[in-house]
Image 1 (cartoon, one colour):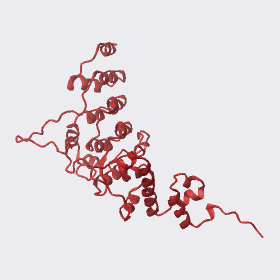
Image 2 (cartoon, rainbow, N blue to C red):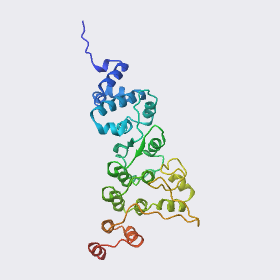
Image 3 (cartoon, rainbow, N blue to C red):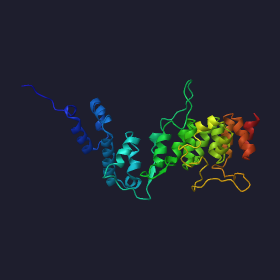
Image 4 (cartoon, rainbow, N blue to C red):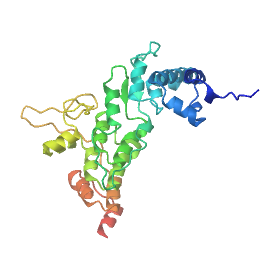
Length: 300
């Protein structure tokens, strides 16, 4: 009589799904290649139910998890895609979202952003992730208000590091402040000696000036008049309070206050990086006065 070894690999996939929903363990799918393949190819409804039940269990043990809501919790997991979220909305036992709840964007959406400096790499556009996913989150009625300024401006800093200008515009429209962590995003742009990024982070009006001077083909690539302009659907710069800058009676656009105040530390870093165009911009246009140490560096 032959002996049969009973293992999870030998169970039907339907039973494995039930075990997965009962265990609520993120480690189960990585215990073997077979289980990883089974759960990776599972229907979106299984992923959606698993995420909801995981949130229920975590919310019972942690008040911050309950406060942030199940959408913020689900977004932490790579399996939480647009299709999985759509499956969530169809589940009758979906948790209720209070009116005061917000959606916190996880760091995983921006962690792998890197500069496209290699020959042959296409430039960043509004069709590159995570912009389409952000557009979906910001426009779906079931998703609470998106807060992109979490984790001390991590998303904006990564976008600046990758020179992902369309994403930088989207995050600024969503209200992300470049002043987080002592103006870290601006400092990264200075180290890259990228004057256009520096101006985009500092000036609220810079985007309008850039778009108005761009040819039609570039305007389409930048996403003018498209749904990718999350902060303002008509292509105008969004203000923190939700208003936009509008032309005055004389036909001139009202000058908006800068997001960031240029200081001597920024000027000193620009001098160290030999970013002469940025140095000139800081001193002549923004009126930044160098300290004595910076003056000595400039005189060498």
